[in-house]
Image (cartoon, rainbow, N blue to C red):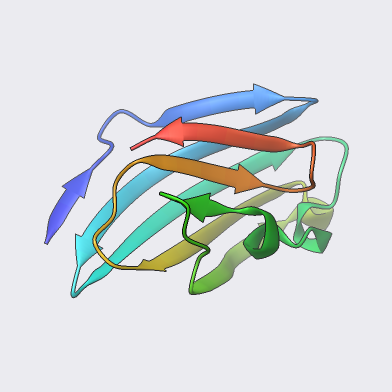
Length: 102
């Protein structure tokens, strides 16, 4: 069980802020906890699983852990098969996406 991201990684674009709260690699999976914040969109309506990837692999699971204030602030978890590292893309649409290097 290896954990990383003690200093949260945050990117902002088009009024949306994405923070990686925690990355865990355990039991053959990579689990990423995210905080998503904005004051424009209902983030719960986006198909984030469809537009996201880690090291070129789509998430095996995506869950909203909680959503407040009409989906403007939500916490989410993405799970990937394999203990992966590399480029993480958190995507909301084809053009609204955030790239992190893990």
